[in-house]
Image 1 (cartoon, protein in one colour):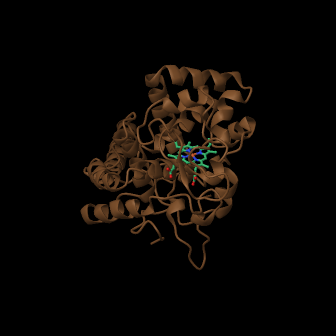
Image 2: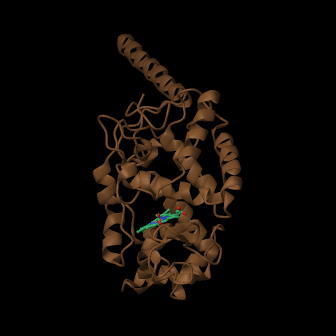
Length: 322
Ligand code: HEM
């Protein structure tokens, strides 16, 4: 009996020591996640002890960048979307071409279109000074997207962290998995469903078009006053011409008035899906419902297939693998 009690006590002690070690490691910025897309792998306090100033550093770089160029906020919200939809939220979109890699930057949805890379570089450089090899580029992109939303007047949210950076990029995934701005609502819904996002996420996240611009090559028909009838393909027209740098619900009001900028925007109302059309009306009427859902859907999007634990790496320079 005494022998059994000894073994039992021994087991209890070993278990306690093991779990204490694991939670200390967690606080140190190491996440023993099982990988894959389980949302519990990421958690908001990930950098609490390893880099508590991470968000302050991101926001201070962001504030200065937006002062110089107000379009930066839109660049960075879109960057997070294009990162997450191609191979998961792993900063694959930031990798430059190399002898062994074709960068996602050259893929059709990104080339001459996706911007903000220099701002991420600056955030990374400042973070490397403050907390070397600690904060992943994928988390910087997620923090920058949230900061950009808040600084433009939109909602704030609690952001799960702990993503790690990929060692690969996927040019094919960018071309295949980032939706084209076409008026095909079923295709848009399918593209979102492949990422685990539903019709509500599609409508709410499309509300990201409340700030930013699109090239006339995409929007000649809907922005006749800004875009020349021919040529000027690269001229920029505001997505939300009422308040192009303010994060609000005027995007949905414009769609209701028939002034959605991209065909993929207007089709949310006209695409014969009751739920999508109702949501456009709801968000046009009630900004705070839009803000709540946008925040929820951004968290959901930010949880698409993150690398965690010992997967991938924390890059020193976001443009190349270590
Ligand atoms: C639903 C499918 C979507 C399609 C088809 C789409 C397509 C586009 C296109 C074609 C542009 C213009 C790019 C250019 O002219 O260079 C654009 C801009 C933008 N998109 Fe989307 N988008 C979608 C969803 C999203 C989502 C989910 C977000 C973020 C939550 C987002 C954020 C933005 C922002 C902020 C801009 C402005 C960028 C700038 O000013 O440079 N988009 N989008």
